[in-house]
Length: 179
Image (tube, rainbow, N blue to C red; front, side):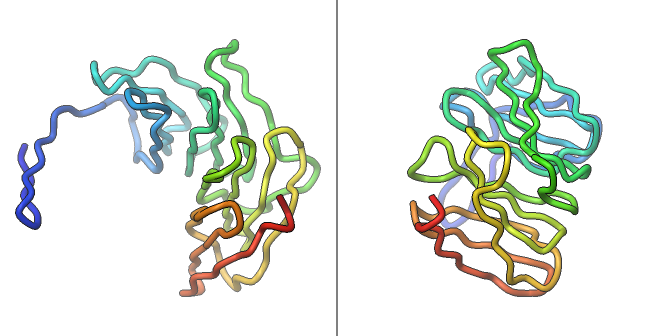
């Protein structure tokens, strides 16, 4: 299928099929592999050259967001309010990053740091954004300010993140003192 926009024609060269419910999030692991999360309670790694799934991890609840971390590890957030890290090079086990009391609502978005291989942020229905280090089991910081669900997050550089919410606001956060 060809799509034309602004004088540029792009050709769709393959479909990666296998999820049984809505695909909620994707990220590139490397130049050939994608990771996806779905409401079918799974995280899948795909080979874009063959359009086939090469690994699947079943999650306990719907997966709302995925992000590829360094060296092939994947962080994902679910509707059970738990963050997990999956290293597909291991035995398929996931590492729980929640700690004692992390997010109290669905995790809606993840964004990895542009400058650190260990840091990412998570956004949640609990109206917060949390800053994480993969080497720690508790968040480094909890960023408040939204008055409704936080729906998306982005990491610009080593010092700034942004979030958007159901309160119709975008917020820019300075996190340099937290990292």
